[in-house]
Image 1: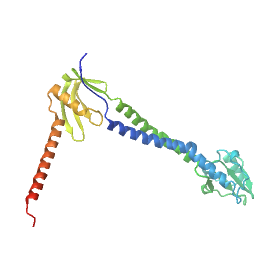
Image 2: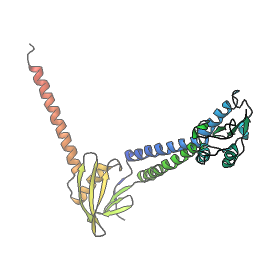
Image 3: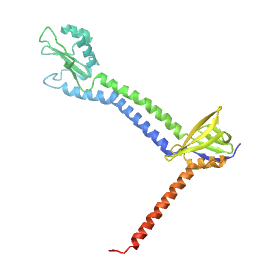
Image 4: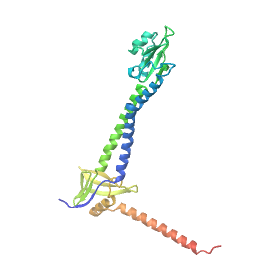
Length: 272
């Protein structure tokens, strides 16, 4: 077996980015699920319990426990579209009997709200505006689950990216490099070039009869500089990473020397 020259795990930056994104989407998705299961229904119940005690309307004659899921705003809107002309038609199309009749008016009450059908005339005029929500309608509650499902897609994607990031391994031995399980022999390496100051460089190599590119990124792999140096030594490539840093250091040294000379010159000038 070829001797190992260098072994590296993942860098923290890439993993932390994917972790943050995964937590963002999954966290928001869980928040939506909470609202759909507990938050919105709980607020509906709290508002209903308060209004059902209103002495000017229900006056405690309707209990929360006796309420069902029908009607809802969507149910009422379907009835409105059929333009019912009598209270009997409303009852038939809603599919439920009035929860209570107060002063001749029929009240159809559910766990999401209620609608009042006036009994003052034999001919009805109904509107979507007749509906009164406790807090959120059934459609709005369902929207929370849709939002959660939408968030789950990118959330799962970033979880998979996170797993890929934290399990990344790079090994360089006497025969070449193994990057994330992919072996690239030294003999197949063509060049290591195009270094970007943001911290990546491209390795070009032959595989399956064509030229391929692998991007080495210091945000993804921990011992980036050492990996580049080891490949360059094995193949005789020009180390663009080291050259860049040496040039940066030289410029910084020149700038420091220039500032020191300027300070010395200023110190030597006589004061007016």
